[in-house]
Image 1: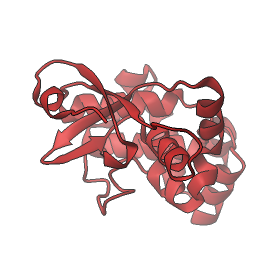
Image 2: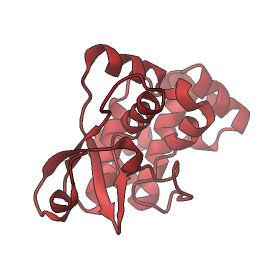
Image 3: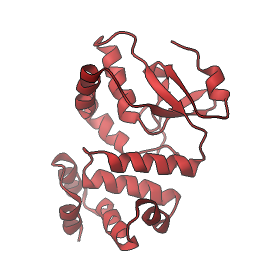
Image 4: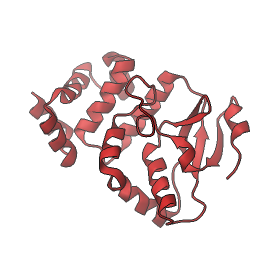
Length: 195
C-alpha cells in the first residue's frame, strides 16, 4: 500500500490509493450521528442490510475492474469517508472474502469546508439510482439540520415547497418508512402517503 501521509498534509486536491479498512465511515465504524458533518443516515441501512446493501456494487467492481474515486478527509489521525461510503464497504467485502488481490480504494483528497462536504454528499445521494424516496428525505433532513430549507432548495434547484414535502416523509410512521425503503417506492407516491 502506498504511503498517504504527504498527500493528506497537502493543500491541493491529491489522489492516492489506500486500504479500504483505513477509510472510516462516520456512523458505521463510529458512534457518530447527525451532528457529524459527514454523517449520512443511509449508513443505518448499510448496517441493517450488510453485504446485501452493496452486492450489486461488488458484482460491478469485479466485472468492470474499476471504481470511482472516494472522497476522504483527515480528522486527527483518521481518514473519514465522505462521498463513497458504499464503494468503501463493497471493497471491504471484496478484500475480506478474497475475491480480488491488492484491493485498494482510489482516493481523491479535496480540501473542503464542512458545508462543501455536505453539498458533495447530497449531490452524490441524489444521483444514486437505487435510492428510495425515504432515503432521499433522510439525506435532505441531514442537510437541512446543518443548513436551511432555502439553502437546500437552491442547491437542488427546487421550490422550497417541494423540499418541505419531501422532508415530510421523515415524519411518517416507522412502519410506512420501512415499506417505502424496502419496496423502493417513488417520491410522488411516498409524498402522497405522508399527507
